[in-house]
Length: 247
Image: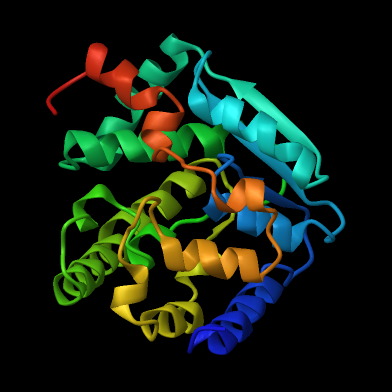
């Protein structure tokens, strides 16, 4: 076991257990990738847990999730979004999102669509894993020190801007949203892993995938490549084609 996994295990289990306080049905915003796949795997024995995936017709997330669900044994809801629904949502959210640039706005619109269409329950998402485990394309080609510095900046921006904005979106629909990978204890534990081990290889997030394998996640989900939410739902392409404003 790599140095630090014992601490990562403990901190994650503590964050996971806090999801159950107070008791409530849990709904994992499920894309079929390794991040939400691990959350679903860890919560699969909790009564009342279910999965939801949203996307425009033909979206890759829908196909990914459909293929992954049999490994998890949880109820799953597939939500097909209409183009006009997404464009209206984008337009309605613009006053709240203010000066958020186009790429960031499209991510938030995708999250808003998932939040708005999710079944009742406490929502659980995988935000934070990409920042902690070097999951974005801009980590490729960086050395360990540069990647660690970029990770710290990405995480700080997520905590200061994108995550509070996501929580404001959840509040619009009176939904509770939690992100176990952003739990302070888990962030601290993940940050102790050597940057060299977190650098992307053939697949992104090799350290996260290795840890998910250690946690028992089936290999089919551990090794599954995954596009970012705004792309996997088809929302980014739609809003680029039919922008409702600048960006």
